[in-house]
Image (cartoon, rainbow, N blue to C red; front, side, top):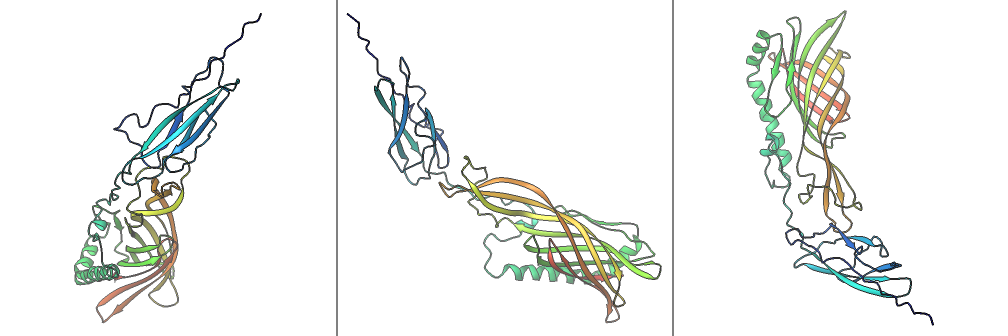
Amino acid sequence: MQARTCRTPPLADAGPDQPADPEQPIYGDDVVTLDGSGSHDPDEIMSYRWTQTEGPSVTLSDSTAVTTTFIAPSTEGEDVIFKFHLTVKDPGGFYNSDEVSIAVSESPEKVDRDEGQCFINAVKPRNPEPGTQNLKRIAGLCFLLASLFIVRRRIRRFFTLHTSHFTLHTSCLLILILSSSPAFGGYFSVGGGLGGSADNYNVTLEAGATEIEIGTRKYFAGVGIPIIPHGYDNIPSDTLEESCPHSECFSAGEESEGSELGIFARAGIEAIYPGMYLSGLLGFTRGTEVKIARSPHTEWLYEESSEKKNYLMYGAGVTYFKEVLDDWQLCFQLDLDNRRGVTASIGFYW
């Protein structure tokens, strides 16, 4: 007479309810892990099966694995409960089930991005009226030009007395250099424009030496500083300043943030008409580029990366030095380059 073997059914364990710590709630886009590794059978467990029984539908990474994951969706109001049923089966056909609950909390309130302390942003109104921004920028530029013309004689005398080097320093910007020799004249200009790959307006300061004679030809050379204030409103204010917590986010584009500064050198030769110079320019700018990602589960935006980036700048221009009204020695410049687009400047020379 043979003894009959009695099999013991498996014991399913879907793991503890989550979150285990109320101080660390689960939010939208968090990756939630369902762990059935605590399940037990004296012989072996042949199969696992996870089934969602409550809550908004989510997609499990593998419903037949010992451990599986899903990405929590966004919720509003009270916590949303998700329940999952784990069924384990052994080779003898015996099975057992267990259930686990997952509480997903309402998303924390998003805060506006830090807009920094650079003076270009500090003087910008928080909520400017539509159509007034460009007028204010033009008015500010005109005021700056008027101030330069009023003090032009003093500045000209200063340059004459200090012919070795002239350097302007500001607390927020790269510094403009000017060096000239008693054998040459000099010029200073300020202007602005828009377009180019920066896709924004710019303000440019430039200074240099004129009347450089080499053989029978005249040349001029200068150094300029382009300022491209992208501001902080290109990036949506609800963009989270952290990378996406899962791998299913997709790119939502790249945006420039803050102020882009640079430096370029220019050299030109007199051509076509006395006082008119054709020139080429070469330099670079440096700014902050932010890569943004979007989650398909919550539609939230994330800052995947924020890094400083250098941009090559090259182009050509026309400069015209002309004395008007027997007293005003004016400098007119028109540039076209890849980074700033079209830039027009006006200044004076001596």
